[in-house]
Image (cartoon, rainbow, N blue to C red; front, top):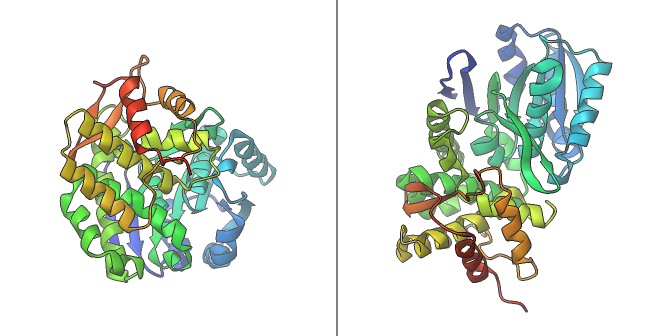
Length: 365
C-alpha cells in the first residue's frame, strides 16, 4: 500500500492508495476510537456497487451504520440536501465522537465533508473516493462545500478528513466519461507543477485508458503528492494553494451558466484550462507552443476545449466576476508560464477575459 501524509500539525492525516483495500477500512479505523455510530453517505449508483462491501467491513468491527443516499449529480450538492443529511444524523443520534464516511465521487465528498464540518460544530469525516477526479483532487485538502445557483462552491468550509482511503479497483467500474473527466485534474497537476507528469500523460495514454494498474497508481500517487505538498504549505489558500485553481475560474463559470447539468466537473475544467492558457498567451506569459501542447493533451483524452456556441458569453463573464477567487472586484486567474509552472495573475481586465471567451467559443452551426 502506498501512503502519503498531509502534514498539518494536529490536523495531519494519511492518504492510502492501493487496489482491493475497501474491505479493510473497518479494521483500519479501529485505532481512531470513534464511537460505534457511523454514517455512510453515498449515491445509489456507488452504493449499489460498493455499499455492501463497506457495510460488511464496518459491521464486522461492531459499528452501527446509518446509510444516507443522495441522488447522483452535481445539482444535488446543495444546502437543501445538506439539511436532509443533518436530519438523518439527528434521527439516528450520531454524537460528537461519531464519523461520517463519504463513499463516492466529488459531489458526495464535498457534501459529506460539509455536513461533517457543521454537524455539532464538526465531527470526523473519512473520504473514500471512488472516481478518478475525487481520488486525485477533491478528496484531498479539506475543502468542502455546496453550490448556489449564482456560483459553484460558494458556501463551504475547510475541514480536513481523518483519513483518505483510495481503492484503485473502484476505477474499473467507472464509466469512461467519468474516468476521462478525472484526467482533466491530472493534466492540471502536470501544467502547474510537474512537466514530467505532463509528458507521462502524453506518452502513456493507452495504458491509462486501458486501466493499467501501474499507470493508474503512478498518476494518482503523483497527483496526491503534488496536492499534499501544496496543501501542507498553504492549508487555507492564502497564497500558493491558489495554483490548484488552474482552469477553475472559467471552468466554474461554465458549470454555473449551464446549471451544473451539461458538463461533468472535469469537462468544464478542461475547457477552462485551455481558455486560461489562451489568456496567458494573450498576456505574453505562455508561448504558443505550450498552449498547443496543453490543447493537444486535453483533446487526446477526448476532453472538450471549446466553449459551446449556445452559451451566452456575457452571462459567463458575469459568473467569472462573482467567483470567490475575486478580491475587491479584482479578477484572479492561474496562468501557465511553461509546462510545470504557473503564476497567480491579476493584471488583466474583464475585456481580456471576454476576448478569450470569444476566441475559444465554438462557431455556431
